Length: 66
Image (cartoon, rainbow, N blue to C red; front, side):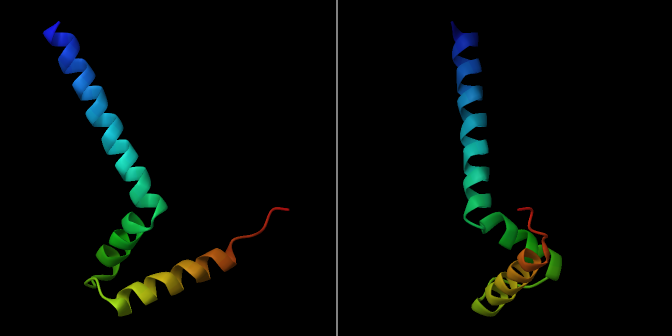
């Protein structure tokens, strides 16, 4: 019974971590953190504006399918 409880707890923790990571991607927290690490900037309104500008420029370059 104890092994089962440990297994279920591990599965729930893994599921929660994955859900949290997905939400961070959806709401641009993870990409913004990667942008800050790549550019060596600290979080600020100027940095966020640069991040959004870069994101929008990249989106415009992507070819449209249909």
